Length: 388
Image (cartoon, rainbow, N blue to C red; front, side):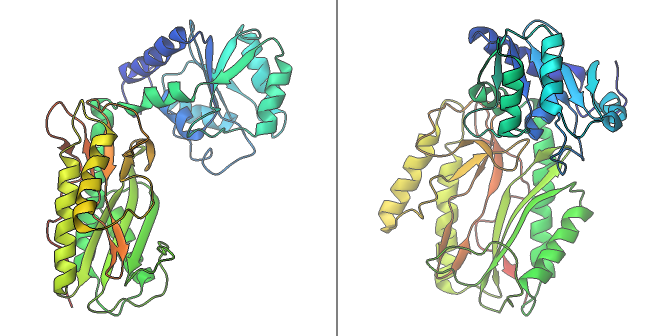
């Protein structure tokens, strides 16, 4: 089947399935059972609008080790599946109940009643079916063994293709330009909610498809944390205002943050922001093939030690970006991975203190050399200024 409007060419999905099957073979798995919405999207190409808001129905992707994949979806989704995916084997049920029994029946018909089946049971994975529903599937197939395939899914998704990176780049460029433009459109005396509206409108004007988070933070930050949700707090001259935004393009996301001074920055703010950007630049330089998250953390620890500061206890200074705004892996000391070309990261050592929420987050793709900036225009080395 040749769909009219696929997000990627057939070869993209063949590569994803082949990589998954290679790992399945190495780990003795006969099939992969995918129920979580974004994993389902990643392996099938079906970006369902209904799936994101409807928890009564199950959307399932099944990848056998030695056969073509099977998709379980709703009858009203078939037209979109055929228009946007390369999946030929489509199973549908219009019932609002009995999904576990239906899923088990499909697995049985595929010859997997006594198979070893990998599912989303572990790290950073969530089922798109209830826990009790999955137990029903297992009960219907007493001869099958269900085991964790979280690491398989993470390994498949962590290195992006060239086209995936370009989608992330488009999402990042939209966000970077919109945030820069918004700083020139807002004024002292506006509320955070009004500022959020201006930013939101500019994001969509520039082509954002969806927003996963839109944070506006103004004024000094206390020791109880940050109120990221925009409120009716009025932003005043001499304060800091910051954004943290996630937007998508063709199902791929960016995660960017920017900070500005409302009016000319006080000397302390100007100096602190410049120091943070120096730190961030040193972190960014570690984002190259062969290094690891530990190399980034060492840089942060060294800078903080010199300044006599401690971490805020967040546990990381960045994370992967792709089908999700925030995804595996973390830029954290516990993450025992090696950077490979094609990984995409948001890197943002940031600070919340009496000056405000000081953050400048950009997105980068790992290469053999210097990291590839996706979020042009990049965060400025000196703090931007909101006209007053």
